[in-house]
Structure formats: C-alpha cells, structure tokens
Amino acid sequence: MVQQVAGARRVPLNRDRVLHAAVALADRVGIESLSMRTLAQELGVVPMALYKHVANKEELLDGMVDVIVGEIDPPETGTAWKCAIRQRILSARRAMLRHPWASRVIESRPHPTLVVFDYLNSVVGMFRAGGFSIDLTHHVMHALGSRVWGFTQEVFPGPPPPADPQQQAAVFEELARRYPYIAEIALGEAHDNGSVVGQGCDDQFEFEFALDLLLDGFERLHQQGWTSAHPS
Image (cartoon, rainbow, N blue to C red; front, side, top):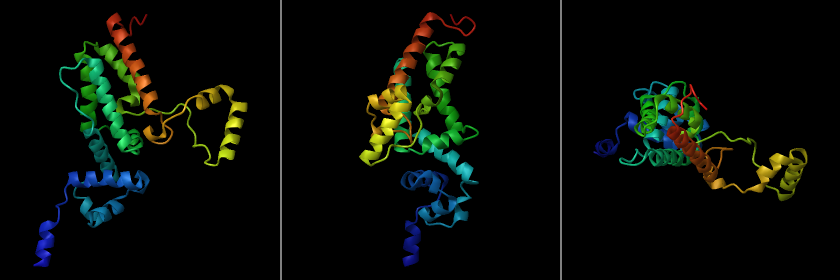
C-alpha cells in the first residue's frame, strides 16, 4: 500500500520537467556544475532515464535556452515599433538577469532552435511592421547583435578589484598611472553590481543608454529612407 501511494505521488518525468529542472539547477549551482548525472540526482532518477527526453548534453542546453527564451514577454499589440522592441529586449534582459549563466550558453549554441528562430522572427517582424525596409532591418539586426538577447560584451573585461582596501587602492593607482584615460572612465562612474548580466557585463543604465541610442538612430534612418546602396 505504501509503495502504491508513493508511486501515485511521483511526478511523471517528461521533457518539460527535465528542462525546467536543469534551468533551476544551473541557477543554483552554476552551469559548469550541470551534468546529466547531477540533473538525474536532482530529479531522483537514474541518468539513463533522462535520455528518453533529451538525446545528450547539447540537446539539454538547447532546451534550456528555449526555456529562457520562453520567459521573454510577448510583444504588446497596438504598440509603436520602437516602444514594442524596447519592451521586448528589456524583458529579454530581465530573463538574463534571472539566469546569469544563460548568455554564455546562448553564445555557445551552434544552431538556433525553432524557439530561438521564433523570437528573432518576432523582433524582425516588429521592425517590418513599423515600415522598415528589408535592407534597413537587415542592418539594424546586425547593429543590435547580442543586445537583442539582453546582454552585451563588456568593453573593459577583467577580474573584479581586490576586496582589501589597501590592495584595491594600489591597483587603482597603478591603473591611473599606466592608463589614465581608461582610469577616468573606470573610476569616474559607479556601477551597480546588482544588475550585472554575467561576469564583466554592463549594468542596467549602460544597457538602456545604448539601446535607446540605437533605437533613436534606427528611427532617424527609417525616416530618411536610408538604404545600404546610398548610405549618405
């Protein structure tokens, strides 16, 4: 009787449960510690049980990306193209902030999944619905780059400064001596560590600042009837 009750309460294993458990595990222990074995332990099954739902680790990672992309809010109907795209990309950024490992996994995927294509297609579609030509839309998507996923590459990569105040002061002094202009930028403004996407990436203000510059520029080019054949 006890075994029957336990069996009745067991949640059946399926692909969706496997993928969501993998995302939760990566959030907790880091993507480097995620393996088929650790995921099986998390789910209380033997590793072979996972292969009924994902063929291998690469398919697992593809599916995890799909879960993250599924968290991005859909575009709001009846909203002007610039506002709609801004909302969509900032929603993508919130997803990246919830899962700091996701940007690295997205960059590592050799082939987009159908879910990824659906997301990109929707962003392209918002530009096209806003009246953008195919030519201009092609180039603005290149300009957005990884920003369309809510993250960017930090222009000043490097390890965090030492925790010890004296060592930190020495590091900053040496930085200012050797690279005065970089020091002006690095030390001139405080950055919010709480809004970082992954290690070394920009904070929320910097992200929105650049995104708004791009969107304003796209709007100006659209209004001017810009084409790559006649960029002037």
